[in-house]
Image 1 (tube, rainbow, N blue to C red):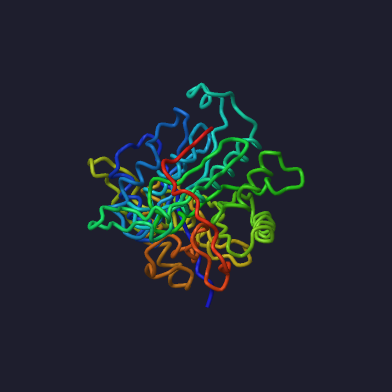
Image 2 (cartoon, helix red, strand yellow):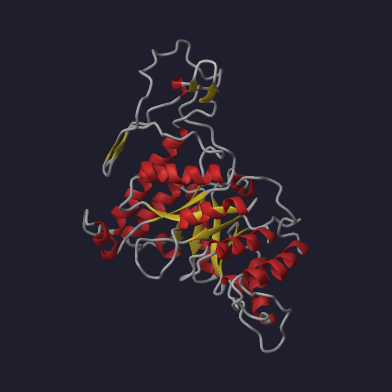
Length: 380
């Protein structure tokens, strides 16, 4: 039996700010049983778009299974605040959050904050790697059973199960612990974008730094490659350097334009406001080209990250026709079998790094415990 694909899709819809639009798109992705959806974000004023993390938190209660992965930049932000925000999305979605790590590399974004000039790309991605490391430590800084809610004694947490993270880096230092309990997934899924050119011998310093961050921290890589041969080579290199637990999804255009002939079906794409939000059908040839890419063998990747041209039209076609064809071929799950994004991706829930060691590895004599953590401390 062929191995099932991991599929995700971008919901990016410049100029759309209504939560209902994104909820409808996420519902289509969920009907297609995709692993997750992404929503891009940055500090640039154009194109106009909503805050990605806030939007996905808003629609989390309106969805039940699909993973929710906003872009959150690590430039001009504090890793302590970012870790709490992504953790909150994981709680609101009951374990379906991810984090698409981004950086802010433009002069416009730097001027919007006025704190520092634009940094070189390699420095931005080195800072991003540190930010992800800090977030992971903060997510682990509460043991899973730290929350006791003991009404008899008035104790909400067991302070002995909160831990300092004591991160000291070139870009910031963070003592911790977090102010929120450990996420339902242990750690939300970390997603990084990588281009095949980042892995080339003549890769730019920024590209090399981005690959280093992905190798060290990513659960999922979204891989940009111009053709199948380059995709296979890049995926093989990533797999050799990161190991088999890394999930690699190749970015793939999923434009399914209107067909003047050979239309496979009709789709009602009227928006909730009554306007025409899409088209009457899709071109059979476009669907067949997409299916050929999705069903190709020897790609080296675990699946694909689909980038629609018209999200409402293209995700409708995906849910109505592409997904059923993939299920018929044994390449796509007929239904979700797990609840969390880690479940969908086949990733284990990581153990906390600060909890007690298994009894077989525990030292003979426990060290004297440090003072219980108090308020978090952050220095940038």
